Amino acid sequence: MSEKFQFMEEPLRERRERGELRELRQLQFMPNSRVLLQGKELINFSSNDYLGLAERPELRQRAEEYMQAYGAGVRASRLVTGNIQAYRTIEEKLARLKGSEAALLFNSGFQANVSLIPMFAGPNSLILMDRLIHNSMIQGALLSRAKLSRFRHNDLDHLQEQLEKAKEKGYDRILILAESVYSMDGDRADVAGLKTLSDRYEAILLIDEAHATGVLGPQGMGLASKMGVDLVMGTFGKGLGSFGAYLACSAKVREYLINYCSGLIYTTALPPQVLGSIEAALDLVPTLEEERKILADKAESFRREIQKIGLSPLDSSTQIVPVLLGESQRALDCANYLKERGYLAMAIRPPTVEEGKARLRIAFNLLHDQKAIDGLIEALRSFVEAS
Ligand SMILES: *Cc1c(COP(=O)(O)O)cnc(C)c1O
Image (cartoon, rainbow, N blue to C red; front, side, top):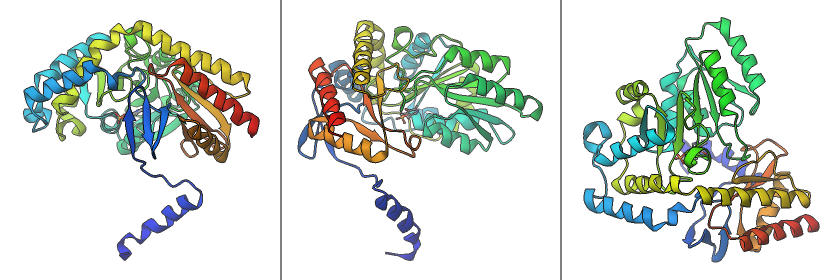
């Protein structure tokens, strides 16, 4: 191997020796939240498609119609010639559903966070972020070159302490970053509390609703809907079964971003088929109130059952339920044990979560039937008894 790439050897060896080497595994989708992995059919408890929308004919059909009408791609960025009619329909619908003045689409959640955060904080600003926020927000915060500080997870007293201290420091802006539902713990933020604090200290609040959109809040449109939060972003790739991201904001912020946000200006617009499936998903989501209740009940009864066998779901109160296992090896063993029995659930290990807090992350969706959930609980019970 050429000397130029010598620097990769050490970090890769380190991963390999710790048994933490990541690999891309090929899999195939089967109906009803099942996947074919290494020749074995598994029930997928690691999918973010919480409402099962990725499989719905409504989304596929609209995607196909849009591709037939507009072509396979949009040929340019939105500011050049990529801004087809579907963008306007979707942004108006979103603003209405989120209760915001305006909305703006982005190509992905990662891209949205990375390109949005430097628009609101610069080298003379302070960013206060919850300890558990998603990597895409951390990358955006680093790019902004602002001073960064973390507050303890969901601890508004700690946040207030930091806001108080920041008062005399002469920052030009303070930006608070939080999620409404945390992806590894399945717990919720106190959105109203965050908003009150941000207003009191004149800080800008950005809330990421990647895991709440489609699932929680008014019409399933997220916990920060209709709350008057400054900036609310969310994604279409999880609960909406499609791809892409949005920001719900004021008309002024939208205008500012269209003029200055590189991640929007210098990138090809989303392809028509993606816009079609987003539009169809936004039509469906408000009608799924009953389904959301069923989903919440599944997760709630699972939490009760695993506590009976001595496993902790931490502070989960959503469709995402961590099953705390402790050491990395135990989490891996458990994931493998489940896999042998036909259930796919990812082991989440440090550094993604704290040392000693390795876990399985179980994500429920509407396509899991009671038999699958009972089977999963039974497998967890026999793992606990055998270990
Ligand atoms: C998945 C996720 C993102 C990234 O969204 P993509 O559309 O998948 O790029 C951003 N924030 C959070 C909290 C997420 O869970």
